[in-house]
Image (cartoon, rainbow, N blue to C red):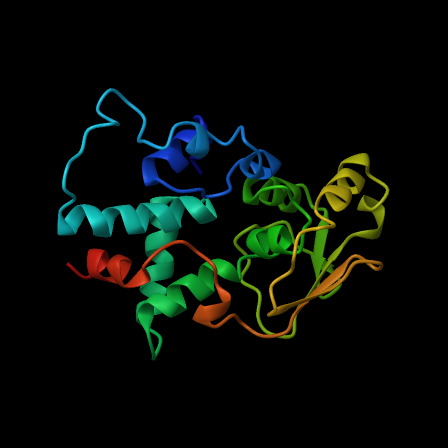
Length: 208
């Protein structure tokens, strides 16, 4: 599957806000959004009044890039959310949040979602005691994620655990740092999801 391989800081600048795609760098003064708070390209500093469509597009792109998803993946989650009863936008973000790579990142086991995705693909984690190397695996309430025993001695995993030790963990997840285990206490409600986007604009975009 194709992945974006360009400069990720340009994505943050294009959306005009931090999407935390670069790990620890995003929390320093080296962050591209803080240094150049305008869109990339020769027309990046132009002032153009956004249209209704552009607002919807930017909301969709922001959420998609925040989670590191392809257009087909994101649209698939929208269709899944639309089939559920309730608020489609809330269900959409809940599906994105419950991905294994995102949960690994939120537990502090990856400096960024991209790194978390790579570590999952390399087979360093297990769900309910079984190895899972599919980043898009959707976790359910009550399921447990842990770092595999053989991976805990890896220098990379030790480095990741040390760097993510101070990061706060969302209320819908329970982390046992000592035993390298995390549990999905419940699927997150909208007020537990801190994505800088107005999800109703995404629903409007796909509803056309």
